[in-house]
Image (cartoon, rainbow, N blue to C red; front, top):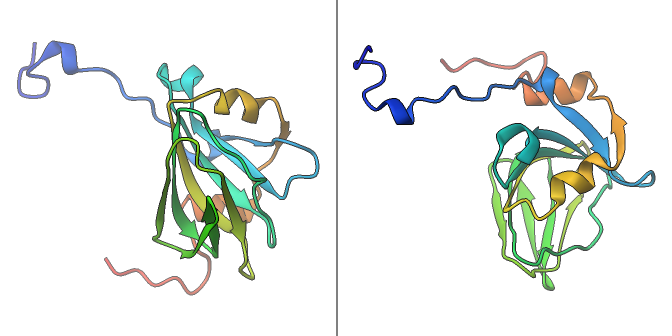
Amino acid sequence: MDTTTCPLPTSCVVPVYKSPKDYQAFRISPGDTNRLAIVFDPTIANMSLTYCVEIFDVGGKTPPNRHQVAVEMFFVLKGEGLASCDGKTVAISAGDSILVPPNGVHVVENTGPTRLYTLCIMVPNEDFAELIRSGTPVELDDEDLAVLGRHDGPGMVSLG
């Protein structure tokens, strides 16, 4: 065994790799103004978590919701909006993070002129992935794939 690349055999597992073209996206309910692209869930990762990209159309928002035991975290990739939890509201934009504790009634809303993209992680899963997958499958369009692949379009300046 090559100990320079894997000194502890029990810690050497093959990671699960996915790229945006592999993500499956869903709209939970037909009238929803947001959709979720699953990156990892219990089926894919074999552990109780859901990691997805939530995409909000202009004016889109989640319905008020809460989770009994799960912690839900958001990281804003692009766009701007409002995040509310138990009556407290903050403005959010690219680079901001939100942590929603269990039982916190929360809403994320796109108030900007473009789509809002957030990474969304829920631990434990608490049937979130199953809820997402029970919705209607939708395609990710070129704009979605550009954001998820960090291609912001013409005029992008490389700093490195």
